[in-house]
Image (tube, rainbow, N blue to C red):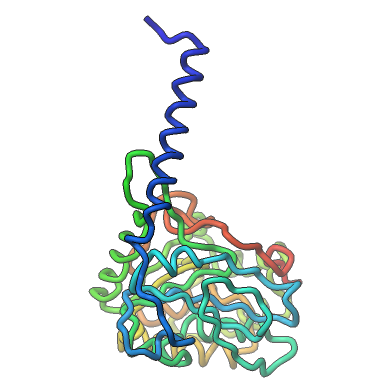
Length: 307
C-alpha cells in the first residue's frame, strides 16, 4: 500500500533526525580525529611534512572592502597534515584557523596584482612551502573546502580524500598542475572574452586594449585558447616545469601593463608552454566550487567588481 502523506512526512523527519544524530555522534567523538597541537606560531617552521598547503591571498586598503575569509578551525583540528596559509597586507583581518602571513603592500592601487604573487608563486615567496608541502591548493578567500555529511557516512573527512587524490595527481603530472576548464568559454575568441570583462566591470578598457595589443605581438598567439578557472587550482611547489611556467607568467603579468585579471594571460601562458593541466574536478557547479569548495566567508570588492 502507498504511504499516506502524514506517514511520509514522519518517515522524512525520522531520516533527518537520524542524519543529525550521526553528525552529532561523529562531531562529539572528534577527539579521535584531532591532530597533534602545534606549538610554533608558524607550524611550517617545525619541519613536519604537509600533504596539502591550502593558500589564499587577500590584499586591500582596508578590511571592509576585501573578501572575508572562512573560519577553517574545524579543518585545522580534524584534517591532519594540512596547513591553511592566509597571505595578506591587513594585520587585523579576522582569520580563525589560518596561519596568517603578513606582506607589506608596495602600492596603494595595485592590491589585486599584489594578491596574485603568493597565489601562483607560493613555492618562492612563502617560507617552508617548497620544503614541506607536497601540494599547494589555492582557493579564493571567501571559499572553504566542502564537507558532505551523509547519514550513511561515519566519517567527515570525505572531501579530504579528494584533495589527497589531487596531491598524487599534481605529483604525477609533467607540469605539476591541476585545474578546471571553463567550458562555457569553449570556442570564444580571446578578444570577445576580454571585451566582456569591460561589460562585467571586471577591468578597464585601457587594460583590455593593452592586453590585446600585447597578445597580438606574440608569435604563437591564437584567438581561441583553452580558458581555465583560477578561483581554485592546485600545483606541486617543487615541480621544475611549474616553477618555470609560473615565473614566466609573473614576469609578464607585472610588466605588460595589461589586465588585473589573471585568467587571460594565464591561458596564453599555458598555450605558450604547451601545458595541459590535469583535471581537478568536473563535478558540480564548477564556478561555485564544484564538489571541492563552498562559500564559507563573504565575497568582497562589491562581489569582485573592480571598475
